[in-house]
Image (cartoon, rainbow, N blue to C red):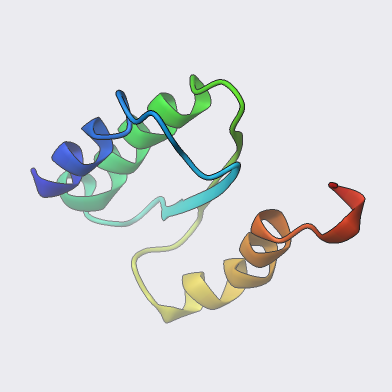
Length: 84
């Protein structure tokens, strides 16, 4: 329930980061992480002016999934001069 409330805050947010990266594991707890992540995904995709990337991992909630996606997340959030 807390993550659903958290994602709902983005609906009316007036200011958001220019680039947002989000990932979720397909095998994470459905009600606790997975479904709220999908709700947030839908909200952020609809926000104008936000470069948004969502990745669904074939894992659960753990270090292996985090380690596998971290380089991509950092490259997305901090793209360097090519984005400027």
